[in-house]
Length: 212
Ligand code: 0O2
Image 1 (spheres, rainbow, N blue to C red):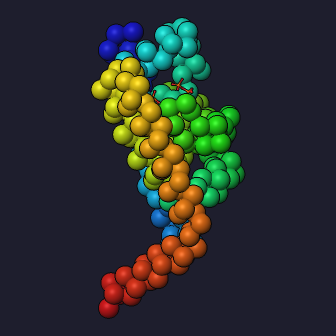
Image 2: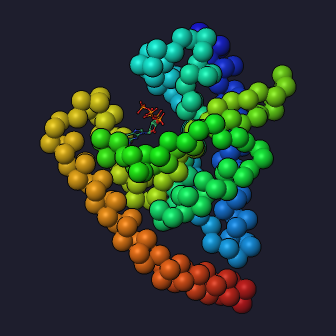
Image 3: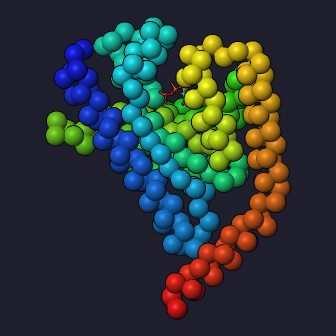
């Protein structure tokens, strides 16, 4: 594919990422406005880089004319939650939605990766409306806590720096750091109610001040 073909190929993915980001950000705003707790803290999204698509296609032996079915994370959405419990609550909300359908789920929290990576992935099919009609694209929703995201961000930049040949010592320290992040998540979970009450009180007070 030349660069014009890639540009055209990526249009529905770019559109899907933009739409999905808006939808999950809106879900957060809506739940907060209803005076409910929102399991979403913040949302990001990206379209996979062409070099990264090609690397993955090579690694998974996906031919160039099967990229749409073979690479599931060309459109990627990342949703950050405060607490581990929020991940299941949000997954439920995603399963109930009518504007996307869940294809399958990967639980890298129970079955965390050897690197120490923890996250809950949901592969969805998302119907996007283009000038050529409806196109169903696959998108990967990565749902994780703030602590899991902190770890994954650091690990990703280190893996990038060392081109996936992380020195053994760094690997071990990252595995330890992943355990520490998990311990933090467990600790936060156990005082979840107190934290949530405090945040609610803080928000109610700020609303009162802004109304004065
Ligand atoms: P990007 O954003 O394109 O640079 P895999 O064989 O591990 O690539 P698998 O098991 O099918 O793939 O995983 P999946 O569910 O497709 O997820 C791949 C994405 O999950 C990665 O995308 C990362 O965003 C994230 N991820 C998976 N494993 C790790 C890990 O060990 N460390 C970190 N930091 N992130 C991970 P790309 O391709 O890296 O990302």
